[in-house]
Image (cartoon, rainbow, N blue to C red):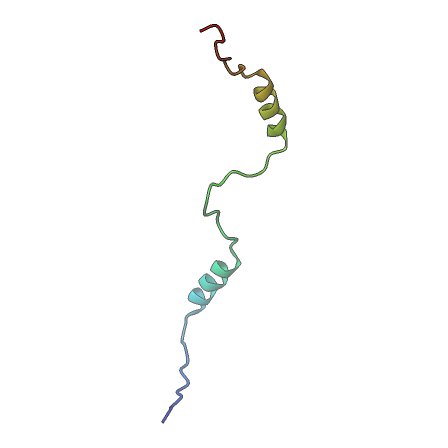
Length: 61
């Protein structure tokens, strides 16, 4: 047989205010993952173009 009992939570006004404040606070950042930065694309392209070429195989041996 299942029974159901209603319980009443008794909290002070300051506790209710604290709970309300916690519910309104924005979430904090959990990870420091990198985000998309469009200005970085130009820098990466410049570094790619300025990088040294691959060495060629010697052909005279």
